[in-house]
Image 1 (cartoon, rainbow, N blue to C red):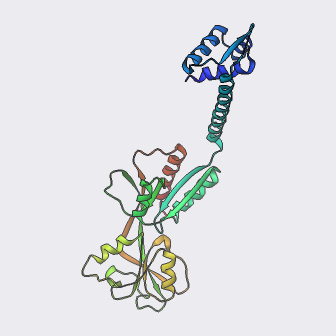
Image 2: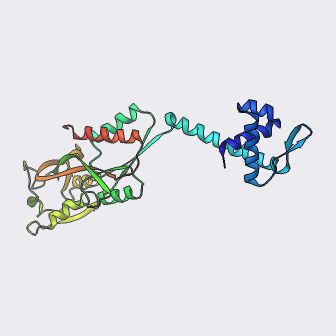
Image 3: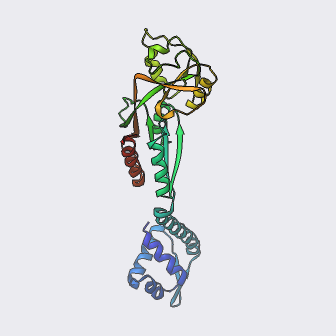
Length: 290
């Protein structure tokens, strides 16, 4: 159904006068008459009837007028809302991250973006790399910062930076006086692992028979692991950016243990231009020296 014909009908139904309606619409009277005839032919009913030299709406015409006027008002309102949204609507960016990856340059870029554009709203989710990739596929995240890649060809990975690891040991622990440690040095001691985010690090470690694991607990967050270390429960491995100054905990560099962080997005998924701009700024910021 022709939108202009509906608009012509609405004006003519209001004025019930072809000459006045044509003038308001800024079209010729024959063009208006032709449009109304086409609309009536399409509907199969008469919308107007002649009364002397004038016209008036038929019963069907009055019914149709109510529906058309309501639809036109809704369309106008939706159009105004969309036009206004270009400058006023919030820009929601859904970001996922693995433990420790939000600290430093990533967090600073989030803060800078929020201050520079009051429309930005960030929804932030912490989880394992696998869970975050699943959320990307479910369209519940726009981007994710992960610590492993995948062979899934629908995902695109861009390396952000590499991070180092440290061993958090409690005060008085036999390892607390060491300047540096190797993974094998931890084998005899109780360790606190993670139920997500860095599992693969421990799986790789545990797969080497010369380094037996000795985990006494699993937690979901670095904060939880450090709470247990502080209580003397065991030692744990944390990324450098997760180090917290805590009484009774020392951090010792772990040799030959590095891990890359990647920004992950779904191939060919539409992201608003402001979101893409944020992604590019985030990558640039994360790649700068810490």
